[in-house]
Image (tube, rainbow, N blue to C red):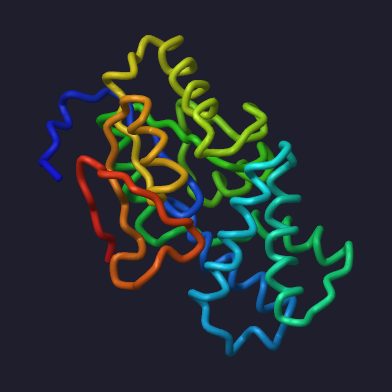
Length: 226
């Protein structure tokens, strides 16, 4: 990994869940509220189960993220002996709106906005991201959701939509820096398409990938978080 010349960029584009929003804390809170027996279960193991279920669902025919998240959490619950009801699936999927912001996200975005235009490329529904965005308290210049594209990262169509939106506003891809936690969802496909990327390593003090499947990618720069 090398040092970056940030003067080479006009726009920073961010993943949301896992990078700006603490999706792992949100997933575990929703699971454990639904299945009390999971309170004492290993959190990283539950997240791994969730990540496998979610990535499998996202690779299939497009469904709203609230349905994907609800079904993925329900799959984990079933694996541990629970029997989620249709109402449980709705509640689990809707819990995305309650997932917490990382403590450093708002202030970092506000500071970065004094120098760069900011965008988001998120695997989420429009309304659920809007709820998360209210928590972040920042106005983004561009927002590209999975719902708008009809597919989920790591599908390259999502990045193509991001490029098209920024280039329409006069920002060429060469002037975009993509910032994300997930090597699987973001860095690997972004780098295949020629993006330069920064890795926000939210799990630097923990082993394993948590809710993110493994992937081979080499970000230009890695920034571990507190």
